[in-house]
Image 1 (cartoon, rainbow, N blue to C red):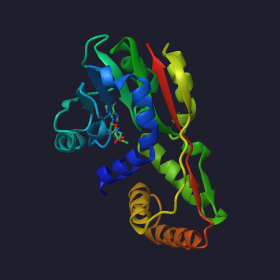
Image 2 (cartoon, rainbow, N blue to C red):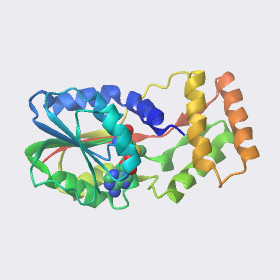
Image 3 (cartoon, protein in one colour):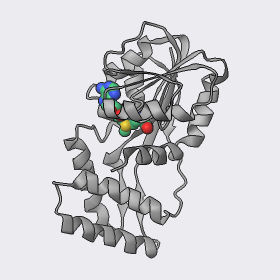
Image 4 (tube, protein in one colour):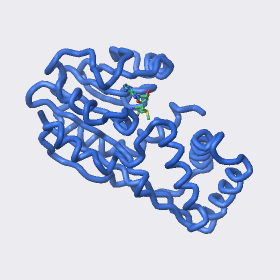
Length: 242
Ligand SMILES: C[S@@+](CC[C@H](N)C(=O)[O-])C[C@H]1O[C@@H](n2cnc3c(N)ncnc32)[C@H](O)[C@@H]1O
């Protein structure tokens, strides 16, 4: 599974929102910007700013790719729950599809707040709520349930997106704007369909029989041809200030 490809696809889904929020966060005058959980650099590489960019991630393989994709960023391997940066040292601290993975998202958000300067901005750009996922037609609802369970088994909190705003509030961050991301569902290209199924196959491997996975893939393809397929995962953002 090529995870960078997947992260780039997700980056496409949030592009308009990111552009808007970075302007709100005064990106043009920021001097230091940090992404926590930067992964392979799908987002960091697309940040357009004269600021010095920093990224941190716990996974050394992802960071090695990030070094290539976002060559100018200053990268560190470390845990988002204990950031190795001084208090109040960044103008903008952001994350993207990150907090659902950390086990203790409140502690992660508190750390993001600690390293942001007074008046600075904290952006959680995309946190999904798989517990509110919609699948249609009916025969594909089991796919949603299985993928949600697979995420849980991988250590994610699949419903975290619904608790994002309250987590900011609990961390003492003044919320400026929050809500679900608007995403216009477009017809999937053949390449996007294959990428979606590469993710599903990777998620369900060892949990669901291969024959059953292939059966659902055919059901998905047929439903798309009939224009009856719905796959919607509400995904939330939050923008706050210190
Ligand atoms: C779904 S990926 C998102 C990567 C990137 N933000 C993006 O959207 O392209 C989540 C990333 O969080 C990292 N991660 C998970 N737990 C972490 C932790 N406690 N501290 C730092 N990074 C962590 C993973 O290694 C992974 O690279």
